[in-house]
Length: 463
Image (tube, helix red, strand yellow):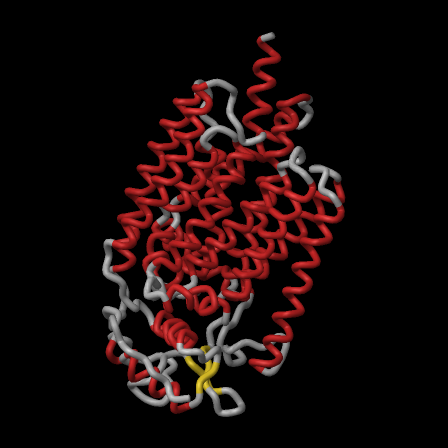
């Protein structure tokens, strides 16, 4: 009977549940409360700091978002662009020095002229569509926080499914406490936290769908499809996120091919069909707007990657990344531990052997997403120098934060013994990470070169 009870408890934890009884119910509510509290702390830390346009990038996105609320999608005439720049104050009013400027000191940073004479932001197009409704309602500061809430929900569901007790609260806490998460949730006109949150939410939904064989095929199909749609929205917001989308597509194909999670073929077909439709849609969009299916708003050669940038980035970026995302240490330790544990116990059978193999495959999938994003930007020439700040350079690596948080949660929940010990440990680790994150957030925000946002500007663009 004792072994049967242990088996039932392990199975319950694997399904993301708790052992039965009042104690299990209370602990489940406590786990949810810890996750909500972590998100609430994120919101408080972000909203109590006055927003600023920190870099020219913020101003470029802001112009696109404000123009969209006026019914002007993507492009503006010269007169409209000049009127928008004057209404928003221009880069000079925000303290920007230099940069790619349209038409003079009171124009829009990082906008470019198309062949037909109209003007468009050089930035990837997705974020204005996601943030525009919040701007129209006058609550733009809640735009990244809303998508952060989606990330918390996805991470919570996935980590509870994978890790069992307190896995959900640990993953959410590690995600919200990062200095990078706080910084970019504060920068409401930047898409960084939003696309990272969409990746975290999408990855979480997809991981839940894969690890829930007892759920109905229809439920798994819809959950996975929602995950892929969020990954696609992130890719439309930052085109380089396509490497994460590609990893997700390869992962589900491998899982289905190996019949490791009893994924129905119809679910995989829907998921991959969604990716195909998205890819075709983006190609058509880019062709119509930018002039070619593989063309963006950036001029040829402006964004450059190459093997020559890897060595300098490996020299300079670790310090920036440790300041912005110290959770990466937990993620790396978890990944190494998972692999070594598999080597030691790969011949095990039963519930223990299943858990070892499951952890290995989940860990490798999350690591693939993490290293694909970071590996791409390790070859980015713009960051391959010792002169930039963490505020400027860390943002390219933030899309991996969800995967890192899930891996870090694996380590945090390895505490043996009673459930309350795991809960207390998770809360203590998250509190320490929030202290580090708040320090990092304020240190990075202090290095910004911009000024306060011009609040309440009325914008009426010519037709």
